[in-house]
Length: 217
Image (cartoon, rainbow, N blue to C red):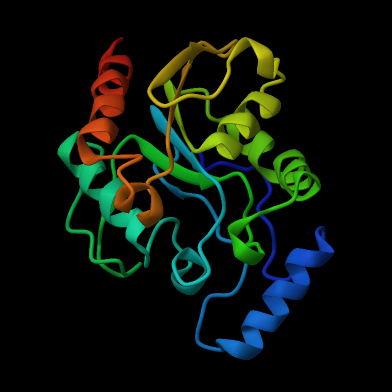
């Protein structure tokens, strides 16, 4: 199987000056962190592509693997295991031996943004330079899961789908011109789960639909 050849950002990517400055600040403050654009991770020929917002400061920005090291990963990875998209045990450590099965995880923005809020310009730059090119190579994808509204919009923009035709909402599903289906969920952040905006049952309800799509021939 050929590896994906889409470009990935280098450790010192400087396309977004504000994100570069924040990265430099974090390298001084947390010299043991990964502190670089976090690459996508998982199967090279996925049936499910998960798109998040951006690395968390003390999560993926610390560990170098998407959704690894903060609470959001606990719900996401336990759900992936429940639905057969991973094997091994998730221990919030990139060396835990966990493997994704027919699934891949990426982010709309590859670098950690201040206050977890990328600007529209930063999202557009990262999308154009990286995510859209990676998505274009993944012909095997049957389902895309967008975690949160920014990721939802990023997927639509990457595929040049009018936003008005597919408004964001939890547990929505929209056919895409690629033949895949876009599913969306509230982000599995600690804030959303602590406030009850997103429960485990609500998250699993999204995956109930996803697994039917990815298992179809």
